Amino acid sequence: MSPPTERFKKLSLESMPPVTRLQSQRQQAEDSSSESETEPDFDIDDDGYMTSPSDLKYSLDLLDEETRDNVTRAIEVPSQFVLRGCQAGDQRCLFLITEPVEYTVRTGTEQSGYGVPSCTCGESPCRHILWLFDQITSQVLGVQRGPYVLSQHGYPTELGNPYDAISDFHLDMLADSLHCDVVGQSPDPNPRRVRETREILASLNEVPIDEYRPDLFDNPRKGKKVIKRGDLEQTIFRMLLCNDEFFQYFLSSMRADELNKNRFRSLQHRADAALAGLGQYAADPSLQDVARPKNVEWCAMHLSMITHQIHSVIHNTNRPLETWELRAAARTAIHVLEQVVNHNRDVGPADLPREERNLYYRLIGNQDRNFTVDVLSSIPPQILGPWIDDLTAIQGKISEHGAPLPYTTRLSSLISHLRSRWTAAGSKRTGQGSDRRAKRMK
Image 1 (cartoon, rainbow, N blue to C red):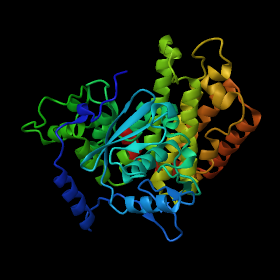
Image 2: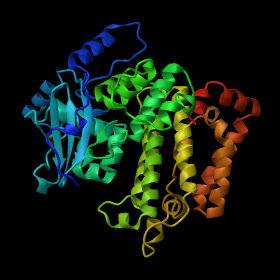
Image 3: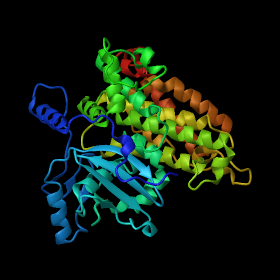
Image 4: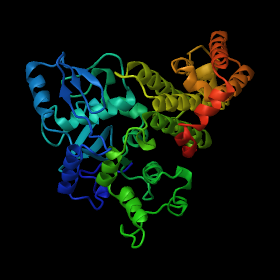
C-alpha cells in the first residue's frame, strides 16, 4: 500500500470556488420557495443532548467542564464540510475535509500514535472530528432509541476504538457510504459515483434510471475537459464526476424522497457491495490470507448490521415514516433476505466450520437469529403486500435448505397474515400506483 500523503493531491480536481459554494448554500437557506432542504447542523437541546447533522443524539455526561466548553464552541460555527477522500496508511486512516480550507483527520491504533483522533486544525475535540465521526457513526451504528455517549475525544463511546471500527467495516465500504473516494484506487470513475450521478440526473429529468443517457453511462469517462459544447447534460455529468464540492452540493440539494438520498436504498447498495466483496473472496484464494478478509463472517456482519439499522430506523425515528420510506425499507429487507437464501454454498478454506463458510447457514440455517423477519413484521401489511409472491418463493427455498423451526414458523405466520389482509385489487393499486419510482430503479 502506498504511504499516506499529507494533502491528498490526487483529489485536487478543479474545485468549485469556495465563495460560490457558500453563497449558494446561503441562498438555498434563504429561499423559502425552494424545494431543497437545508442540511441540519449540530445543536444542543433543552435537555442538554447534542443533536447532529445525521439526526443522532449524544449525551455529554462523560465530558468534563473544559471539554464540554470546547464542544460547545466547536459547534457554534455552522458546518459546511465536504469529505474529499480517505486513505489507509500504516495502522491508521486519514480523512480529508474541506470547509473550504483543507483539514486532515487521522485515527489509528495506539501504536501508530493516533489512537486518539487528531485534526490538523489543532483543536481537540474540533468541529471536524465531531462532524466526521457523526457521519461514521451514522453508517456503522445508525439510529438508536437513546442517545450516544460522547467521549472527550469527540466520538461516541459505543463506537469503540474508531480505527478498529473503520477497519472492521472496511474503508472502501465506508467511503462509498460517505460518498467519497479512497485515494490511490483506479483512475477510472468510481462506480458508486457514476451510479449516484445517474440517479441524480435521471430523477431531475424524470426519466427511468436505466433509460437515462446510455451514451454517457454505458462506458463512463470523465473526459479531458469538463465542458462539452452543445451538451449541457454531459457537462454537468463530468462536473459531478470530477468535482467533489459540486457533487456534494447537488446531493444535499435533492429532496429526501429522491432515490439518491433514500437511506434504505443506500443500505441496499451496501448489502450488494458486501456480497460482491464475498464473491471476490470466493473467487481469489489469495484474498483469504489478508488481514480482515471479506469472508463469510465479514459479509454476515454487514448484512446483520443492515437489517438491524432498517429495524432501528422504523422503530426509533422521532416521526412516523412516510409510505415511500416504508416501501423502501420493505424492498431492501426482502432483497437482503433473498440474496442470503441464494448464497447457500460454501466458500473459503474447507477446514473452516460450516458457519464460517456458508452465508445462509450462518444467518438462517444454523440458529434462529430472526434474520430480517423482525424487520418485515414491523412493516404494515398494506405496504408489504406487493411482495407476497416474492416472500412465498423465498419461503420455499428456505424449506428446501432447512432452517430452525421457530424461524420458519414466524415467516410462515407472516406470509399467512399478509395473504389474509391482501387482495388482488389492493396489490394492483399499490404496486402500480405510487411505487413507480421503484420500478424505474430496476
